[in-house]
Length: 400
Image (cartoon, rainbow, N blue to C red; front, side):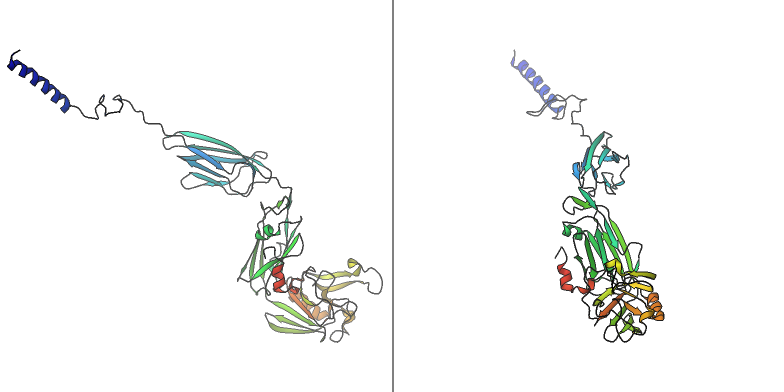
């Protein structure tokens, strides 16, 4: 080949190479960067998005009935959630979050019950998934019911009224029970709980309640382990309003009782308290019951015969302790009223004063007894709460 022909061939090859390079790029189908793989012009091998993930907590056995059931969706939202009591067929109430990624139950579960949790969810591109879980709640050995004194039907009390919670089972974890008992007073006043025994606990302020105070009590014991396999049976609430301060000061030396309303003396009554053989207890008593007509019978506390026995109908009777001490009318002791103590332990009044006292003193009002010659009213004697010093009262708490 001539030199000129060789140059023409070489030039043609060179032009072809340059043309090919100018029309190609690393993004073109069939051409790859080193180590790469070729893909077809119409292929799409990116991984498919995962389905929505649904989690339920708590799940399994021995679940506390007060722990909310929470259903949560990851990678999508929830379509529907049902939590059903398997035995009763009842549905548990609950609410979705604003973005529908979470559902939370809004009421407690039952003890010793099985619940079927069914949930469905969906991803943003429409892929759906379901989840089915069983939740079984714990089975207590026994449940303890908290009763209140005063009963919830009572809403109006005096400044001396203690709050009493009585359980119908022994409480071995008193601290757990006490943590579940809440008292809120408005205005706020310092107060505390005092355990009389394994079943009964009292609450009182450091000093008498202020007149006009509102008191809210919550026994939030449901689901609480009270010890020994005993759990709280139910939550309960008590709402009280403290009326005017009514305090009677009965003095055995003067045989008179001075009546104070909101700190101002409004009446002076001659009285007769317990004689030497049956003296009236000392200390602050709290009115716990009142009856216009009441049969007083010494046999109710074991004295059924002999010179100390009695049975009679008395009028305008207001109970101030549980061992038979009342403020009431007694026409038989009128001659001694104002001069000597001749009763079986009650505070006797004439008819007019007894009726006045009955019309003004109500549950929770206070009768303070001094110089009676009797022993101190016991703390357990409905209500001897105010006989306990504040430091001793605080020591009676399980949370001291």
